[in-house]
Image 1 (cartoon, rainbow, N blue to C red):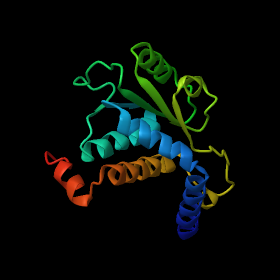
Image 2 (cartoon, one colour):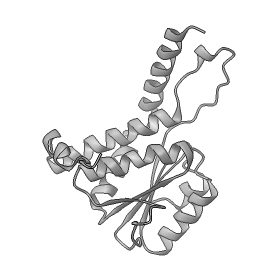
Image 3 (cartoon, helix red, strand yellow):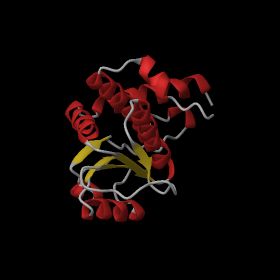
Length: 180
């Protein structure tokens, strides 16, 4: 395997996928976060691990945020926002959470590969990362990844939130986890 070629292909593929994400959709998610009383995030598997970065980023911007499934997560209410990360937008446990969030009056945002998915149809905000399924013949021919780009989307949204709130890296460091 050509390991250098693999790294180059992954980086190029990730950059290509990130540039296919709609700026308007990113701006809509940023606005929803800024308008929310509290932000809740949820996801399963790799998407869940990556969307937790959005919760961390929001907390570092001084926003109140929670990860669904944690014992300390409070009840979601009107004025709150649930952001779900799901490649398919159809993960059954995430569909249930989306339905509950809407039932309790919260707004719903989805970062996925499919805005017309079950959750996408319910969502107030959709950010679509185009999923491209390619099975390379050789490992080094692998391209970009939905999951890599999901993390990048979370970081971009953090930058937009910081800009909107007039915050700097100093503010992020002040709110950064110090119990590590």
